[in-house]
Image (cartoon, rainbow, N blue to C red; front, side, top):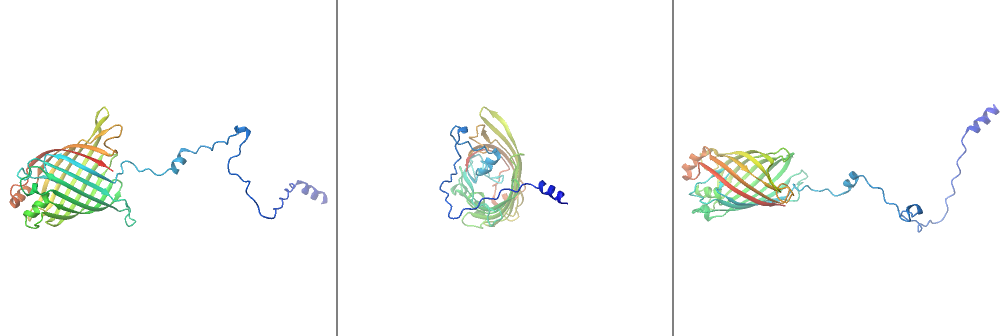
Length: 325
């Protein structure tokens, strides 16, 4: 028994050394250095810090906003050979030489209103109808928009808004109908806008109700497809956008005027440069276009209300240029 106990004790590991006693009194850190130590093996220089993985470096950098996420734009419709509203155009009695306008849109910086991801947008337009001899040409077209919106699905924006029109087709017909002495019209509207830049599909659906000047409902539906990089010439190229739309209304232009205002098709050629200085995600853009519009069933009904005001068919050419910011 005594012999087996001695063997067991011999098999146990040797006890570790007893830790030194902690010195008493204050401890001074004056000699502590956080610089890397110099040594002969490094040639008297501190060794370089190990390189971090690229993914780690990227996570430390500030997030970059894509160039395509502009908060606003200014658009100059340098010239359109006809003045139209949702595809419905006026005869030469109202507009002889076409139309030009400066419009803009700006999304306010707070894009998370009420913590619900809601954003606010301001818009407006100032236009001139060239060669009109009556009230349409004497009064500049002015429009103001305010809307709140939210992206409900990827690439799909929903908005609820308010619009004020002074002059133009809305103001003139409001004045001619006797509903407003100041050529003024107001409406509220709701819209869905879709733009898938990867797949090329785009379009919108708009429904509005006029409550001042012109009272009634109006609608506008459009769908299109964008062919990217179809035309190329050196550093320049152009996309091709083809779209079609229809604009019905229910009593908006007058009592009993219910049906389709106009049908339209449009082809646009957004120009871009391969070095990124024009078009696509660049700030400036250039967009010539051509459209064809046919009056709908409301043409005869509006003729009874206002005379021969609506043109049966119009082929319109125009060019837009602007700046995104």
